[in-house]
Amino acid sequence: MIGWLIIACEIGFWVFVLAGLCSRYVWKKKKLGTFLLICTPIVDLILLIVTVIDLKNGAVATTIHGIAAVYIGVSIAFGHRMIQWADGHFNYRFGNGDKPVKIKYGKAHARKEREGWYRHLLSLFIGGGILVSITLYINNYAQTESLMRIMLLWSLIVIIDFVISFSYTLFPKKQKV
Image 1 (tube, one colour):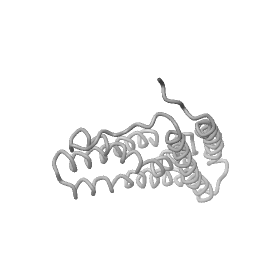
Image 2: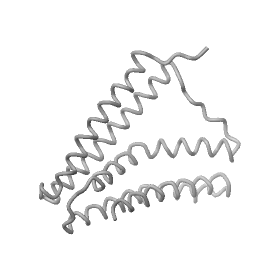
Image 3: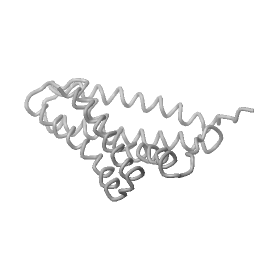
Image 4: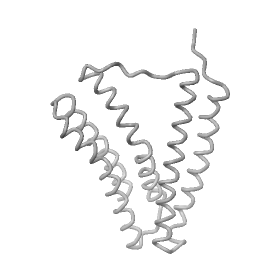
């Protein structure tokens, strides 16, 4: 059930984003658009509440429960950036805005990669905090053991992302001639 809820929350996130952007640029209802975009964190809150209730009712934590925390961490850390990206493209397409610029090389690209890693680290702290909090709240290590394995795997992924992201600082991508 939690797996389907994660999928529904991801869909819900993008439904709120799309509805907000359509309201803002297509239907020219800026206040409604802003309200719908502000509602996107509600999806995360619902997922968190249902996950905790499921575990509190005795469910043994699975990888899916851990992915719920990962999803929430990523959504909080990257959500605003994803919405800005979508807003820029929507504004260009429907609101007569400027074409979004994609940074592909040089120091600016390296800075963008580092900023992405900082967000990834933030998502680890948020999601990891949720995982640890759930583990402490449930207070049954045998029941929540898989949550800590998710935390270890995610930490490894963040370390790999660090190496890749910061490699652009040492070896900046050059513009193709």
